[in-house]
View 1 (cartoon, rainbow, N blue to C red):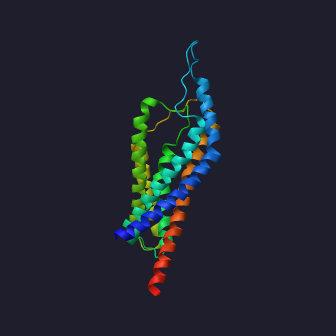
View 2 (cartoon, helix red, strand yellow):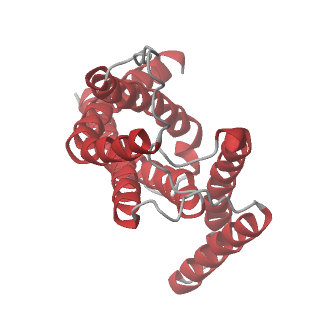
View 3 (cartoon, rainbow, N blue to C red):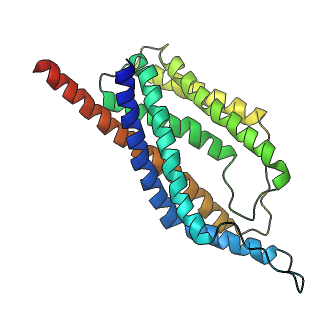
Length: 243
């Protein structure tokens, strides 16, 4: 088992590396223009520098931040690859699917749905110049709580679906359980609205859509890459047994 898990973990890390690089390229290509525009608004709204005062230089230049963006998505992808490999090892036998690749895709899809989309709907990300620093702790804990509850909603959907026999009943039970958990979570957790009325709505939603797109690209690439790697591993193992 340890060697088997190590093999899967390495595949998960490799898949995460690939996904992180792809997501970083997507974020750099489609997101940086919106961040630059938001920073420009933030700088325009800042109070003027008093005469004789030396303006403090940022610790990291914009070009450095852009490089750091790709590095961050790559490291995040590697970490998520390790998590999905661990989840695959622990949950593989619970899936009623014979194909290893479909299990990998199901895990990635579940993470995207419960861990990304559910929190994004209630707490969509905001660009620079939006947000009150005094509420950062509340926003962070609320987001993390909803992330966990989103994954619980996916688990509840799977459990509910397995209590039924007919296909349409399984689908209805799964969707119903998922929506109930999400609805309760949305009602219990506070709503946070900190976007100024003067902030351009088009820029705000362009930034949010791109942010969601980065996550969608990352988890799609991670699922596809990990599915390909575990499928090739299973094929080699089958060939070795037959040989």
